Image (cartoon, rainbow, N blue to C red; front, side, top):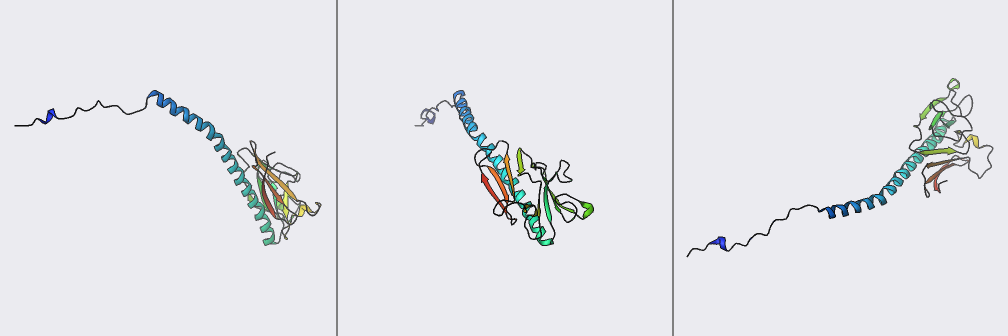
Length: 197
């Protein structure tokens, strides 16, 4: 007797196509929308805060470099707020450092001004402060470090107070993401985080 295998096979269930139903797709899009609504502002804050920290660190490095160069060379070195052409200083009492800064050997002519005819020479020109960041000072357009490393334009400032104070923050700053850079009377540069203004 011959067994017919075709009779003993189980029938296959009808195949179901894989994919999303319209309802599943709408639910996924809704969840994605909620996650983006929560995550995007937080991500933008992170980007702003990282840019602020990077700019503050770059400025602190420039100030420390100027102080170090003054001590190494035995000559005054200044860092000043650049003018719009980034070719000269913006003035002795400007508070806006948005055009960046210029570091130069400040050995002749007017203190805090680039006088190339009097022996001053450029050491560094920074890029502009960009991306909605604002760098301001307490109405000092330059910091001039003596060969001792102390700022020379701090002579009229009482001992125990800051010689120069800079504030750096994003125009949309929130929380404690403002950076304050303080140069004390000895020339030491300190960086702290404070509440946005």
